[in-house]
Image (cartoon, rainbow, N blue to C red):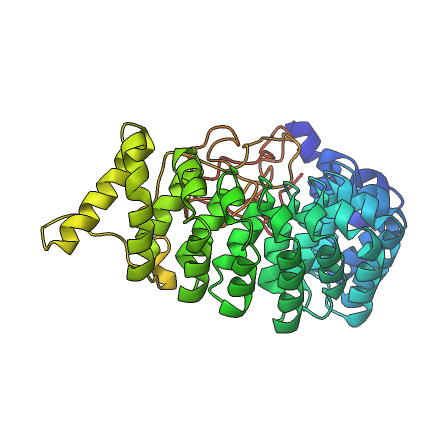
Length: 441
């Protein structure tokens, strides 16, 4: 190892002209070239640029060469960078799908600075947005575009995601990307995306990934978005309350809705025939409990009066005991006796995560690990995450994490033996540090 490192200790780059392309694919040669780029000497940068730009596609997908490409993109001038981008453009989708190429391409997007560079990249990716979003590596390239392009330049992403919102929203990676699109879109663009989601909400809420997209919009606290979305469930509230994933969305619609929408949603579960089925259902009973907690006084009184005749038949079930306790507290309050205080009927946005919710079930998605993943990152939100599996049902509102596209520091020991590419158990672990060099070889 020492002899390999010392091989380049006193070598002048001019002596290696004609061999630079080969050195890019060698572990120690690649490290030597990166150090030369870091020196910032314009002549060294030119020499490396001239011998590597014809091989950009191959080097970006090479286990060692991709690091040289990242460092070159960082230190090249705008004209050189434009040449490199144009050299990669014919195979940019292929590069994005590659476990090494995705890193180099993300670095390329990070350093784009001219309208010409932006146009070349957006044209190269325009017709493959949805397949890239669905790919383990490609989705990070799309998210990097969202982070570094203006909303106007990212319009091609919003167009593709909006018209395919069911395909994207019901996908493990896609549900995260769709939420990031909502974050980065401008006012009109965001309105269009929410419109597409609202039109397809009935399908999305019943999906293990799509339901998080709908919850995300409800949590934005924008009545112009959340009210039409919640009202789209009217006519199907009882049925959706009995479904594993959509029941969570109905609860959130009740908690975050305005008074008129909340009352309309609760009225649909008042029917005595439906109400008994809901109270006995392992998911829907939580919807009824939420309705009891957040209904206005008049609606709450009607709901409890409808529950009373059914209470005796469910009193000895786990759900029945909790509901019986809520009714007892309600009666104590009416009679001026001390008892438990229910959560407020109207919640401010800051209260959504402060109110204690059930912890006995989960609609989070299965955690997964990939030794080839280009990221590992702790974030907050909703989406493809840990915290159990679709069958575990140990959920807790407000604690769902998602995977996003910020690459962790990779293999900085220079020996090629690191393997920190897997998705982390996100939980509340500290975020890994990032390296502008993405690691040395």
